[in-house]
Picture 1 (cartoon, rainbow over the protein chains, first blue to last red):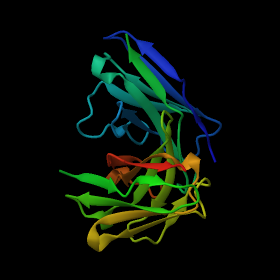
Picture 2: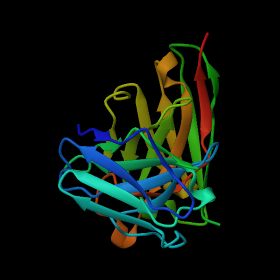
Picture 3: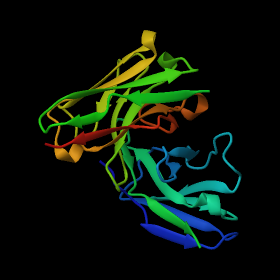
Picture 4: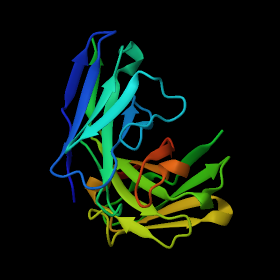
Length: 108
Length: 125
């Protein structure tokens, strides 16, 4: 099964741009999805199909994918964006889900 | 409000069994594939299982294959996870999560757009 690698932590100042990467040995023909999780809460989907944003998710959240790396970009970071972020994908047939190890975003 | 509510967690001895339930409200469960995901204390998310809307297709992570069984009762708008031969490393918060539908759904495990709050399972003697 594929493994997804994320940096353990990213720190940015308010108003700056945060970029969180998700790398795989191979990103098969499956999309990448992104979630944020605040302490003690369930994850929230913020990006699906690499770059689509669910309704209710602020426009400052965007996603992209190129080769074997997907990137979540948060523009104009706000204090409320401080959370753990996870990428997720599946194997080529969609029969096996996999999450990245998570990235703690700290807003300085 | 569309929501999922898990129940059935608790303390169980190693080697024991437990069944988790997930109740769906304000949407028709049969229209969606569902998943179970867990999170050990202080750790990341781990995908466990997928079940299609009709129960015709079921997938498991290697870590739980042969020990966990997912099922659903669409008439009761409920999802279940039967867990056997539990180990200390199964200690975690267990979440049920809905596979997104519509243009978001591509078949198989995909984006999880609705999550429950989770139920805690502790395996300890």
